[in-house]
Structures are given as structure tokens and as C-alpha cells.
Length: 383
Image (cartoon, rainbow, N blue to C red; front, top):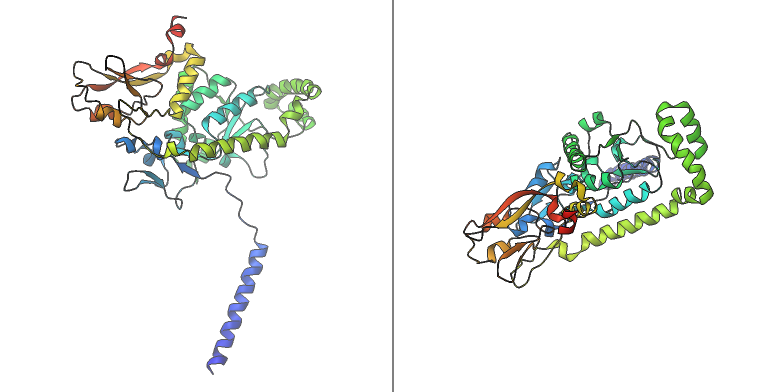
């Protein structure tokens, strides 16, 4: 009797399994997430050097960031949407898709092709829409720092952002606060560079040259921008530049190269630890966003006074030359000693985290407000 009772159950289970398999075959797989996972580089977190910073937890829209028992920042993959807002606020968070330097190189490369460069995010792209090669798609426009917008605007004053802000209000990826964060970052880049960011009314689509010609003759928006580029494109066809621009193989090569460099940056052991410096052994660690500002100021010294900075300094009258607290708690290794034994701070390494002021037992260490002229050589400032 027991066997007879189990038989229908077995048949039901088998039937259920068959139905599930059939449904799985009929149901298309969900699209792969185009956003790369976010990696954490604890070596760029000032908490490892003794700070109490927690800005990353404030910008994360879904509370996916936390600190472990060693005070290392961690990401809970279950809650992370890969929006990248943490990447825009701190060097300790990166995507293995591309580094800021390679992203800037991409702006330079696209700018050399004679057309404006557009920035948007995945959630802004309509379904079945293939963007033009001069469109840079980010996980969120707020995923890049103000320092990047500064450098990008200097590289290409024709930079444009396409963003329908009404979609940001209910964004399932970056949350409603992303609009304020990206607006703040862009505004800072504009203020520092004194260059206005263009606001695109729509995204350029990847189409053939004839389709673009007909669009240019029938659409006022495209007539202004596209007609000019078509003239250049006709000349480019003869020179081979057109084929180079639309060469998918070349684009994939650049993308793969940037991906490998981003992986190398994320896996660099030096970026995963804080090694305390001493006066005898200074462990220098340039921070990407600071390096970006310093390089931009050196390339465009005329804008350096527009860029406010803070820099650590030492009151020699209060300093007792104990050295250990301020050296060991500096996350970038920005401090060294001159021949007289006085502390010297390197402006290209100091990230103004204020750890030195926090741990100095005599109150000799402090921060003062300055601007990006601190990155310039005396020759540049005299010019």
C-alpha cells in the first residue's frame, strides 16, 4: 500500500520537473549585468592609518558597504548594485573595467576623432539602442570624481552629458541621491576648469554615414552638430580614419587593454595594505585622484588658482621631533625630513586627511587652505 501511495507522488514530482525544464527552455535568460563588480583597495582607505572617515557608507544607496573587525572596508555583494558611487567618492573603490587614467585616455582618443564626447549611464540607454562610438557609458554618471571631470573638460571642452534626470528619481541602481552627487561632481569640475559641460538632448546612435546624412537634413538638432562631422567624415573615409574609428576589433582591443590595466591596479598588493612610514623608511603611495589634479594643474597652470586644496604643515615652534605619530599615520607617505631634521610635506602626496593633526601630541601638525599652485614648479609660477 505504501508503494502505491508513493507512486503518484513520484509521478507528480517527475511531471513537475519536466514542466520546470520546459519553462526554463521557453523563458529567456536574464540579460547579463553590464556593470563590473566593485573591488575594494583597503590601502587607499584612510581608516587603516587611523582615521574615522566613513563617507563611502553615506553615498552607498543600499548600505552595502561596511567595515570589518580590522577596519577594512568591505562590500556585501548581496546588496551591491554596482552603481559605482563609492568609486566617485574614494580611491579605495574601483571597477575592474577601467581606471580613471584609461578613461581619460579614452576621452583624449575620441576627441582626436573630431567629434564631441558624450557621457551617459546604462539606465539612460533605450532598449535595442546601439550608441555611437563616441559615447562613454558609465555604471552611473556619479561614479566618477570631480577630479576626473576637471581633467576631462580640459582634454575636451566639447564634453557633453546625456541624462534624463526624471529617471534618476526612481533609479533602481544608484538611488535618488545619485542626482545630487553627480551634479556636485560635475559642478566642481566646471568651476575648477571654468569650462561649461554640455547637456545633450539625445544620444547619438551608431548608424551608417547615409543614415546620418538623412537625419542631418531632417532634424534641426542633428543638422547643427552632425552635418559638420559629416564633412570631416567624408575626408576621413579617404584617409582611412573612418574605418579606424568604426573598427570594432580596434575598439575591443582598447577595451581589453584598459580592462587588464584595471585588473592590475585592483590586484596590486601595495593597494591592499597600509605600511606605516618612519623617518628612515618612507613608504610613498600616490593617490589617483590627487595625481589627476596635480597633472592637470601642471598641464594647464593658468587654472591652478581656481582649484582649492588643503595641505598639511608643521608649526616648528610646537614640534618636538618625535616623528612617529605623524609619519606612521600618514596613509600616503607624504612626510619626510630635510637635512636639518625638519618635516617636509610633499603636496603631490598629501591627501589632507588630517591624520597628522589628529595624532600629533603637541598640536604642531595642522592643515591650511591653499590652491593647486602648490603642484607647480617655481618656473611655472613665474611664467
